[in-house]
Image (cartoon, rainbow, N blue to C red; front, side, top):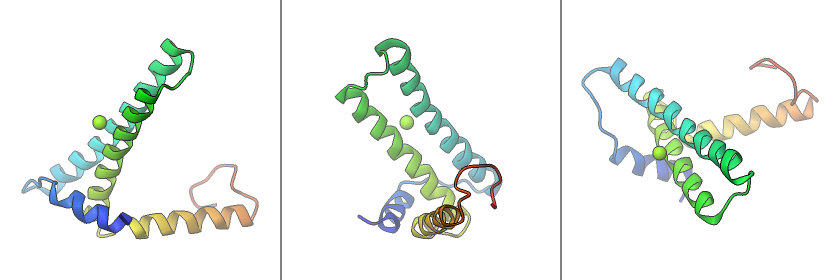
Amino acid sequence: MTLNEYQKEALVTAVFADDEFKDLMHWMLGLSGETGEIAEKLKKIIRDKDGVVSEEDRIEIIKEMGDVLWYLAVLAKHFDTDLDEVAAGNIKKLRSRQARGVISGNGDNR
Ligand SMILES: [Mg+2]
């Protein structure tokens, strides 16, 4: 499955409001919440399991990654783009930074 095929399938399960602002908040808060769920699971692994990731932990984190991807797919559609474009643009940016020796450091547009 390609990223764009995934995005198309994700959009089938999206529920839209009649209010664009509400939709934007829904997608953005959902994305933030799901990334937080990954962080929470990792926190518990560090706190309770000395950082040792079990197979069950790994499976649960992968599920949360899927939830992140779902919200990202829907948010990308909101901004009239697709996941292939997002992914390609990100790799292009990182490769450019790497080639220029600025992959570390600060600034979104370095
Ligand atoms: Mg989740």
